[in-house]
Image 1: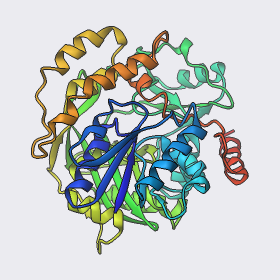
Image 2: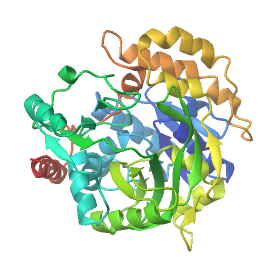
Image 3: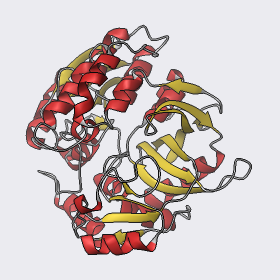
Length: 407
């Protein structure tokens, strides 16, 4: 295949580039700035800098299309929330290129946390008690219901913007700064003790072809996971297939879920929290050939990561920096230049030399705003539920359905 991997700033995008390139695919990369780490891997045939899909959607699509035609790209594999812009404009992509993602309607339903909770119920996948709030008054009323709580926007990602009164993130965001609206509601759930586990899956024509469940073997500053260990995925593989069946039996793409284990080590009890309809760090736990065959859909049985498999993200300091205020940037840059690269075996260290550029990119985007580097870093590629420039009437209607369904 001739593959274009977009949003190459992400660690898992770099891993995907390395894996696909190492097994013989011709791989290209793109992002909105020159210093994205994945754009400098030795496994690339070339890379492209594009306009922002969020702030200049038409220009983003036009630039990408020209590159796809020039390099005869077969497949575009999104790795972050540019997937929504590409899916909404899929009719404008060159004939013959495949977008490795679900339809916009499916992706919107997965990304919106309120609609995803309803999907999980339809799929008979356990969820925690959930209250959807659409005003600051409703938010305060909801958090008063739970002695321990956590809340987040319906369109959010990772640990960014998490309101809680429990654990290491307690009080990090004041409740006064959280302003739910009918257009941007929040979800409030009881905080329940138990480890968070995450999954990553490849799905082809409605069948899960690769799956891994993993937990953080090590965390940096009690927040960002920097080492991952695969665990038995029997239950979550079943849940993932149930969710895909309920969503769209023809779904193709990469999909990731977060669960909390409310049970014990001997008797797990997983409840699903949210979905990222894109890859996450779980891909690093799978072997290169398995990832390639799963994406192509040529596996007879679902490929799963062997329990006990452990990997580390390169440059843990970089991951930690994404959760810290900008005042920590000088210290982070110092640590970044002294941390040992743990991407052993790839002989691709030049890519990681561009990591400081990733931090600088986030700092530039957030200039003048009170926001963390992680939130800033993705600002030009995220999607928060707004109508997308040039989207089809059918997709606009599906977005309205998602919005209407959560009230």
